[in-house]
Length: 211
Image 1: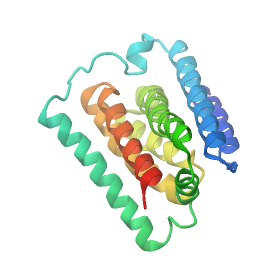
Image 2 (image 1 turned 45 degrees about the vertical axis):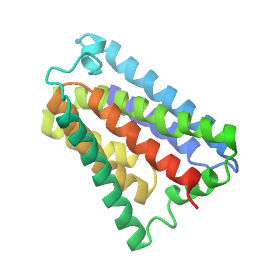
Image 3 (image 1 turned 180 degrees about the vertical axis):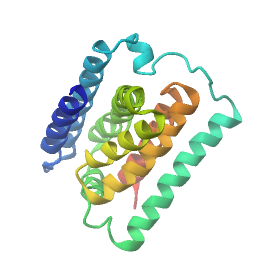
């Protein structure tokens, strides 16, 4: 029941944010509010669990940490997978009519201050909030009830569905599988936050300063 409530509220919040405003500043504030809501939902699920919140949300130190070249390889894998998906979306024309293209258009017109706000709100905040909710709370809850395999699959599908856009949602679902597997491998969301944040940062910066 808690899963359905959290996902339902999250869908409503994302749905409101998907009614795109005319400025990047308005979009950034909407993204920040959605990220804050996601963290609150994750906290509510953690409080209702039988595990300590830090363990349930996988915020504690990794049980099997990735260091050095292995961590670098995980980041490169994430960026390579994301870039490959992006090329497929461009080649098929799916990106042109997607939310991704609309966000790129707003970012291309951003001023200096708006650019900084966009980096914080569209790149860094979602990486933290989405990992806490989807790879922390939701993956933990589903794994406890259905096993890690089903937990990984369902949390990734929900991650894609809640983006409310076929192109962006499909990409998110695939990347969610990668991030979820990384979380299960390490026992923590630390590496997933790093991979997610760097991927978002590169996408936002590329859109801000693309010719």
